[in-house]
Amino acid sequence: MVSHADRRSRLIRAFPDTIDALLITRLVNVRYLCGYSGSNGALLVTRDGSVVAATDGRYVTQMAQSAPDIECIEARAVGAALVGRARNEGITRVGIEAAHVTLATHEALREAAGADLALVATRPLVEPLRAVKDQAELATLRTACEITTAAFETVVSSLRPGPTERDVAWQLEAEMRERGASGPAFDTIVAFGPNSAIPHHQPTDRRLAPGDLVKVDFGALYDGYHADMTRTVAAAPVADWQRDLHQLVTEIQAECVAACVMGAVPDQLNTRAHRAIEAAGHRVAHGLGHGVGLEIHEDPFLTRGSTAAPLTANVAVTIEPGIYLPEQGGVRIEDTVVVGETATRSLTTAPRELLELS
Image (cartoon, rainbow, N blue to C red; front, side):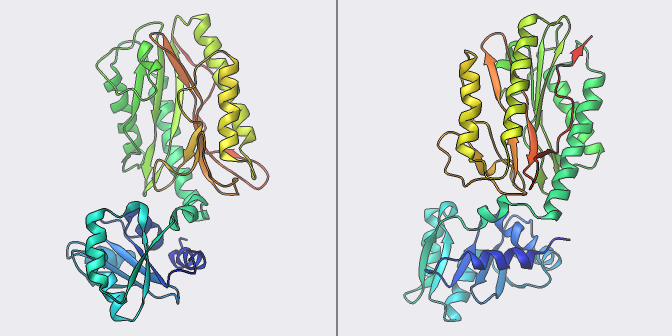
């Protein structure tokens, strides 16, 4: 059972001393705090625990259904309306999500604030809370990953030379929808042969040919939560270099998953993967992974120079090392994993060994 009130209580405890209320205008954060998923909405959360929402006439019913315990005011300019409400109630310091407020929006907020209310730029406050999943989130994320795994296993079981990259991408997305997904979590990546050496290749009309590596990176979107999984398979005949490259990436990925435990530092996890790739004589193309949840890319980021804090229990991240040989092919293996108190578990469970399509 989702407790949005508990999430808001944890947010209030994270308030800096410089604010008396926080204006939340980033929609994904609004959803996290009250369940509302429309395209226009905001929240004002005060230090004393009161909460007011705002949305326009298109969404007042949806807001009432999503957050029946929260007062909602109707307005098109939702942020300005809530700042005006704060000013009228005598609140003098309102924090704003500085990283997500445009200059134009800030000007409108300043006008609504007037001379007696200060707008205070805050560091991200909701995002660190979102990084640690509650049990309801973990259950939803698990379902998204189960749908993803099942779609992959169904499509790859009948995959043979002939279809195009676009064909396979469409098949994966159709299978996910058949299993309850509202759609893909992001643009599905399907790459055959030399195209698999492009980390974020966009599917084309290239047809699967014998001897091709096949890289698929995709995930299901389920009840707002994003799954993310990559597998690389090969169409026979399979060359020794393909087997060797796949085995190398498999070993690096397994080592990094094993190291992704409570207390692990994201920057150090990324360095671990990069050193293994470079020690094998290959170029590093991207970071090791990222948080996943209401967004496909969210805190914490397992990348070079990341300042993310050490991992704690119930943080969900991807582990996705990849090695790419230009004009030949590439291998990436990725799982969505959850850090546990005693062990890290993978929510995406499709086989990781090299599947050879005959």
